[in-house]
Length: 443
Image 1: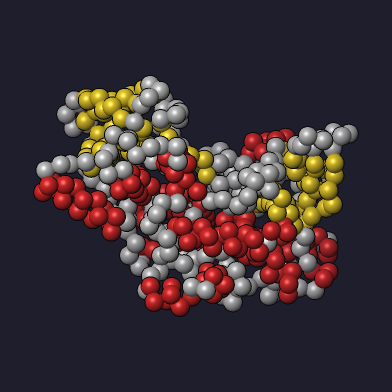
Image 2: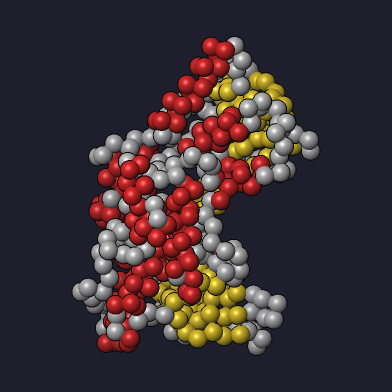
């Protein structure tokens, strides 16, 4: 039941929670559908974002760092190659299309891709409410209510469908707490903004792309500082981006994974983890090795690679940190005094259930207790007959390795929109099963 002081908005076909790349791609798909559909087929939508403006991993927009996906895997092209929201139209709008072609690259810098995302977000700004943090989703008859607290009482956005895309949560190792001098890599540039050039030493923990990028940047940006890279592997391992391995990111691979039994899913994930997890672009590995070797030639080493090692203790002492590093090969330990320690230890997919409140116990689960997710990313919720809850992220166990990656956002947005339209049409006709709508969205 709602609070008597709640303020109710009009009913929307779709309310999206979170406005990162996933729901941005969905907003674009909805916008394009509405531009070509009859008025009575339009889909009304609102997206709620707790940040005051669009932003995506701002703390890792390192100068020179490149994307790991092709520019063609943007927010729209794989769904609709003629979309005005693709990366190529963005380049044209910015006056850089010819220059980009002459650059002869598939992978733009992260800085440029973020500018593209901001450009695209501005194109659907009328669908977004920023500074709106959702605290609860609840059922209300045939509708869902999305609650956003405010100083004058909560605003309740009523929806026929809710799409939850809360993104990733930075992961710190057990027993390690972020602090003034202990950071997750996602905060790297933000934390460095207040640091002077007299920093003497950094410790970077982790063996993946973010860890290598952080080590490279700190080594380059602070020419007087030592950088200690600590990880359990012998050395950085290269990402497998060969053509056949990359097919694990194809749209068709989602069908293969979704239809496979649990044993096959586990094998596929084990086979292809080295396309994405705890691996580094070969060019970056070679650059770090080149620098370390050149320092040996010059007799002054600043980049120290401590492989087969782990951090066993860390103390944030106000003016700096003391990190205890243990060799997993010999068991010997050493203490490293540093100005700051950066933990590039990955991310966790955020669980959507806390937002669902009283609905959470009614969400169907599999034998392992994980959410049961339809191929269309729709949850099965007991008691919800007509309203739909969709999730973007948190579906690696059902849809595979692309669950939280940019590779699938364009195609997935089209699949979710198609599902919303099919269920709406089925409800209008009183059918038990959704209809297949030909030409509802570009695939």
